Image 1 (tube, helix red, strand yellow):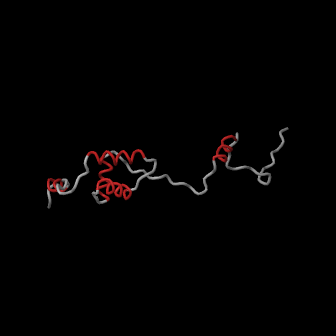
Image 2 (cartoon, rainbow, N blue to C red):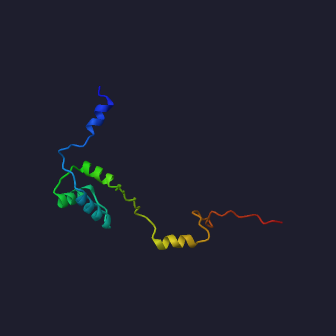
Image 3 (spheres, rainbow, N blue to C red):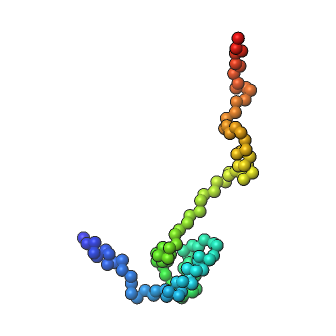
Length: 114
């Protein structure tokens, strides 16, 4: 059985692993922030290789991005049958927003009051 100290020692940084310089890190972060697109881990990997010549495993790139303050963003689901903006505004304008409507066939005749 391993003790907790041996587990923490395994998490240390490998001294033989190449590290990004501060200048290259700054340039990569700047390019990521200035672009209006979302970036996949694969795209960031290609950018790092292009700028520095260093190739990291995708899980390490994930850690680097977290360290730099980036977080994953997942797009919201879009429903196929979503109402258009015009339909939404029209619905908001209606005074009665009932989902059910009584049709003449279902109406009960009310007794006249004496």
